[in-house]
Length: 188
Image 1 (cartoon, rainbow, N blue to C red):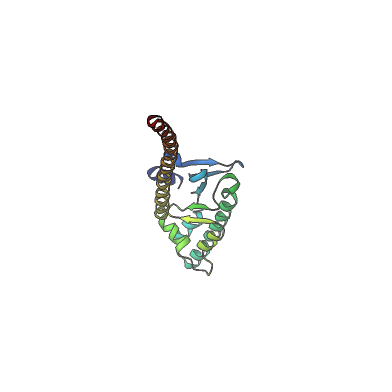
Image 2: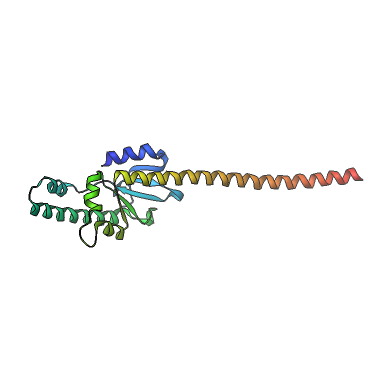
């Protein structure tokens, strides 16, 4: 998961806007962060509990599948709680949410899309401010972030232009004063 996460980040974002294995003051390391405006960070965790998921796929009886699925969903909830506790740290510059990267589409489907109980895992994750993403949905998030980063560059360029125009206005005011003075002297 970490390898695919790093690869996807490097393909889409400029190196200055993400970092792998980012350490917080607590000593905890998140798999990656994306740096946005005003040095705000989006933490991304790619570790994922797959042991019971594999057992669920390999077992043959429906009873065992159900049992391993329940254990798997319990593992995922614990992982969501861990992400919420360790990586959502607004006092260290993170946003008030984190991304949970699920490394395979089939795992994402089984975990998030195929919610059979009344309170799905997706709702549970959102309530803890953890956003589950698959490789495809993460790609879409990164594209949106990239568009935002480009917009910020345009905004910065526009701010520089406005600053230069303000300076030019001041220079033109000084020139106008000098020009008026020369005109007054020529009239005399």
